[in-house]
Image (cartoon, rainbow, N blue to C red):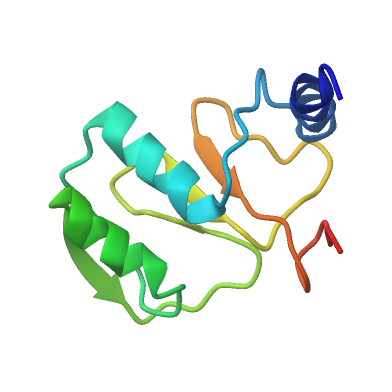
Length: 113
């Protein structure tokens, strides 16, 4: 299907208010790309996250601290402009100058089954 990824990214950008969208295979890989792009070396984030997040930090050599803060829809990697928005999808959710990583699947805001 020609243009389907481009169409999806454009429509998601319009919905969220983001200037652009880059789609990846999963939220963790989007987070990894952001950390690589921004050359982030340290951060702090909720210990109530997916196991893939601390594993990715270890892979990238990022120094991190875990916090006891809980989250519902999304959380920020403190000290960075990166957000894990894996459970959040709403109109105009984009925060200017931030990198918000989304995820779709069973039980998430955009169920893809």
